[in-house]
Image: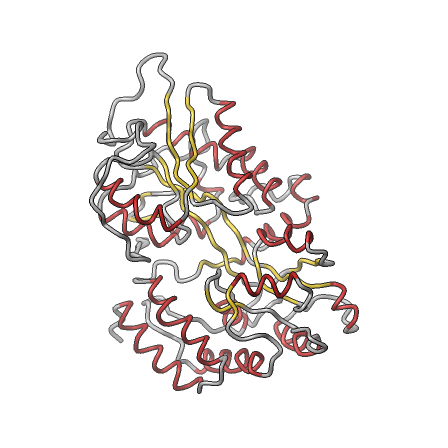
Length: 423
């Protein structure tokens, strides 16, 4: 079955310049001859991993270089916005790095396919130096595949789980984290008071939390035809209930991701949906932290997954060596190292029984969510615009008291226009 990539962001198509770090890729066709005998291959990787998890990625590159003396990778870390500005024109004209994480939004790959900038990954299988795609996160592999060709591997995979403050739960007389969506809402109300919110929700400048709330109630944003289902009875009911929770001040309105994190870090919120990157900071802040599965919803377990694509330039001089790096990066030993260093779950599905990973509570909890995790708006045309111009404003409106039915009617019209839905 064909999986469609769609452009997720407007990317600057600036005039290509001779960019730094491009010695291994500039102007070379994808079928270029490999290195001469005894030549040490130098590959350049651009990433946007500037946060607290940066050392874990740097550790992977260091380990690869130590174990592959004839292939050396230099990772250049830059802000995501910088990569978005420089990489499209660089790759389209045969310049730039051999490898890159083009964006934290997997839908961005469509932009690079339009300019034939991505190398199809042909070295797949279970052998040495091959990408074992059958044991990588299925949602990521599906998102990175078009017409049967794989164009990226997951640089990481993260899921969202439920963080909760054990001390605040104890004060409220609640023994355990909520197990069902009904308990989730009830606990949010019970935990609210004395300057504490039951639930900290962010609605912008963050990984999305609100789709999870809808999924828990059996509703959604778009259907298989990329048409809005925000105006269905199920979605209206779900959005009405959750927005009322905010309006009733059981959760704050209008928080960015950073503001939501700060609220939880300060002990002013009892629960929050977040990813593995937040755990260390909350513990450092002195929070008596618990991590639990997202409560079970109407259709069973569900949560949101995010993944960053790692791709190869179609014009790299060293396609075989670049793919060998991808195979190593997604291999068992590398993913075990990365998970233990970062707290992220491994991108592989066959490490669940590893004793060291099972013993790491954060890694184990987030890895356990992979089978039930869903990507946000995968393959939806103009996905980034749908998020920024439709979904985020919709949540902002209804959590401030706007009529839900009217708001979703307006949002549906705009969403369908963006996706090209003809219903």
